[in-house]
Length: 190
Image (cartoon, rainbow, N blue to C red; front, side, top):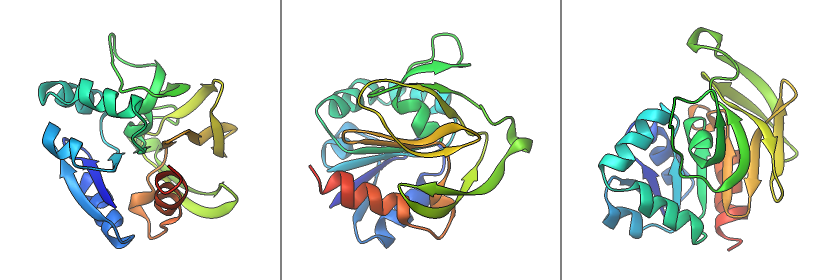
């Protein structure tokens, strides 16, 4: 499968490497042509406000929204979770998202950079080590959203249809469980 990773800002290199390790062709997405060539998309961690502004500058904001609306499988980690949320709390004034998941996400919910931490969590029934860096959490889920993991009594991994989001960074660990779930359960299930 050809997997795109939005490569405008953030830790896209780690997701590209991980997708390749999982046996997929991985390409950096910076143009509409590259976006149109992929069968799945990963939105990396980074700075959500910067990523959305760059997506708009690169002419990718509306095309990504359209691909999400048409059912493209998309996985977002950390900032990617914010970008997939329909609603944001503690965002900057006028902050936009790609949307798609019926949830409200709180930016930097676990605190500032110095409050970053690692924790063992249960993701969809499997134990894994999670890295939280200035991470969001889900304040509220709407209809159709499945909670796959929690931390500090808040959802930190959710799925709605062909969309998956985590507030943590599995690409920074050696555990491929989240990416394999995305590839095997979401992408192949379409």
